[in-house]
Image 1 (tube, rainbow, N blue to C red):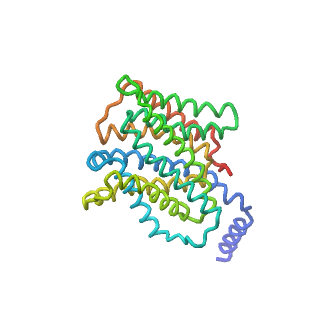
Image 2: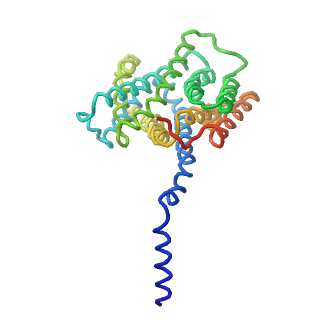
Image 3: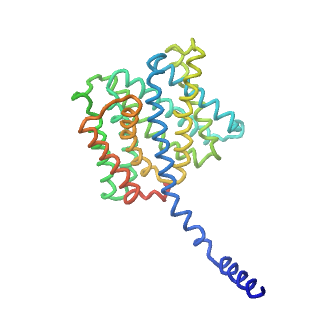
Length: 312
């Protein structure tokens, strides 16, 4: 009995003498994979949510549906988080306003572009935003391999029906969406550092909903039906509420450059969602493009992007 007790006490003493770094090493090693998993889950939520949104947008219009989703997501998150608006300082408000504007720009411009140019081309141009973030965040020439591979894959995905779009306004809207996406990544990182929990995301979503209101109302949002509210409520959880929460959590654990490269998987996931939900088939070039962006994401995760070192 005494020998067993002495043995247990000896084991406990050994554990107590372990350095804190040894106890934390396992959690630190798992952090990059956890962050990548959150980003991947966000991408699946966005793309499958967008695919499921197609019938609703055809029925009620893209602008009205997008605005309503932003409003519902903002209200739900505000009720849950209850951000103390009166306690925020000037710097916090500036970040929240800028992030909200980026969210509104990214969402509204993208869906407006879809009315004028093919989906594949719109996604390819919009992806230039996170691709630019990844290129600017590269610390060596070798690390440029992954964003360049991803960019080539996205170009292959953009080829639909053997034709390219020539609508100038549609191209400009897609470029604006790309700028919004790049700003969103950088500002979401800052919001995660400036606010506690989900407070920054909650305030920014409220800003985005307010900024999108004029366009939403002009597109028919003033005459909402109960059916539209019901159908859009579920979509608001898939896009944008759940992805924004997952991406904010991921960006607190990884660099913006790595996040930008991992976003290259989104066109491939979108192609998968289109095939599964909307029965949209892929050409041989689009399958090759999907392979390229998947390889770029895996390469960024395993070798080139230093996921475990969040940028300041």
